[in-house]
Image 1 (tube, helix red, strand yellow):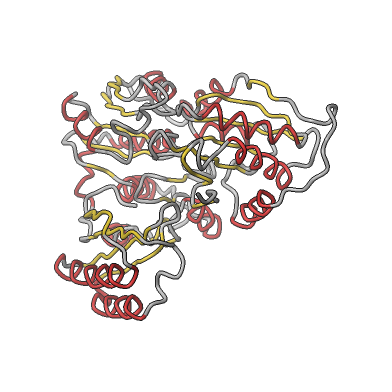
Image 2 (cartoon, rainbow, N blue to C red):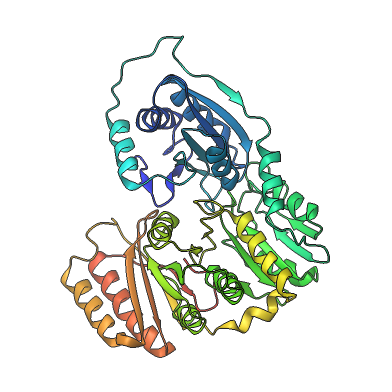
Length: 459
């Protein structure tokens, strides 16, 4: 079985078989070698609610400490809190033990730099090379680091979150799905402290039920709860709460495109958008781009992955960027996705406007968009064969200026993702099918899943 490597969101694998304690120990050592300056360096670490989290986290912490790094453990916290504490506390690095929206048997290791942002690809490659062949002089007992419980981090983070909404949330009834994940205590508490009435599900983690019944990647749960509880809106987080998606009172989904449209449109009208650029990805819907243009804003597309979004935000000086999946980044508030920040920023806009989320559903009509995932034996070389190459060229020409074709290898799974959007559904489907047929024939693959993204979560 191959060893998992860094993907678009850290290292992930089945805990105990792919992501073993031995591998986690080596990752800790390698991270210390690349990001820490030796004895006296400091790291902060959090995890989600998975049963394997303490095992993997202990091994990573041991690896860090063995290279002279003092580790402060946060326990079960959202990724946003780990990022906040890393940059606020002047730590050399942060670590989050989580596999995000993956099932409970998986786990992962996300590494944050001193700014609280995810590592760049060069740093990840350097860490991987050290894992493959780790060689360093051993440290004696006086030079190794210690591992201790951090104090006060939750209180600091919650107070900061509450300060983001000076208007308060009194009068709002909010449905909330915490996916039995890292936000199960903090998120309801913050929203209640701000005055909202909160109806919750997904707040009884047992180590095995994270993401099992709902969460941001299974939005039907929050859509149903919002309607049944007669809430003004619903909020759903994923396992580590670095993303959020919303539901209006009618059970209609608001993905990242729609949330960014609301936020950017509001602050543009308020004269608070210093930059006209909003950063999305190659998956962002054409209807979203058209809406931004009509409001004097422009959509800039990054590669998929919130790290790529963050990079482009910095290059453009943008004030917001994100993905359809609900990873939204507000650079003035932090360098990585934070689902609690996203939810609070959106609800604050609604409070300022005196509008409901449902009032915004018709802000724009999305273009017909579809995503087909095709299983592939390998993620490299998928586009080199003549049939696939020909189909890509033909489908792109067929769509022309009436839409877009985006085909890419998954960063986390052995599959190729085919996304096609067009101003006409039949045109979209014909172009997509041409590519999928070629992939299945030439790669010996098969269709794993098909999602109509027009009104769905996105990727």
